[in-house]
Amino acid sequence: MASARILIVEDNPINLKLVRDVLTISGYEVVAAPSGEEGVTLAQSCAPDLVLMDIQLPGIDGYEALRMIRQSPHLDSVPVVAVTAFAMPEDRERASGAGFDGYLSKPLSVRSLPSQIQDYLSVGRTDVR
Ligand code: MN
Image 1: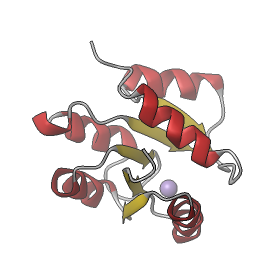
Image 2: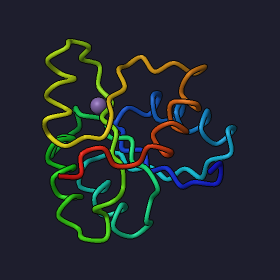
Image 3: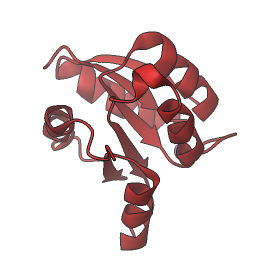
């Protein structure tokens, strides 16, 4: 699934460039939004195969953006993975409880990221209830 389209929602341009470069080199098509609002709009228009969602964003945060994405019927099956600098176990639990399909903590590993993305694409939605 190396041609999969990945939507990155990330307000930090340095983090965004890093993730975009790694995933582009790995053969993924990358689209990006710098805020939750724009991320939701882009998710609705670009039909991503996976969303990487920063939690701390200007305006609505990653939790609210996820909620809005989940309200779009045609996005119901798209896995959304939380990305956050918080690395405490309760944050992982909160992300899982909020309906994220996975959780990556910053700093992201350039070496591991492509296989992590591949795994999330293979597994798909985990939060279907
Ligand atoms: Mn952020």
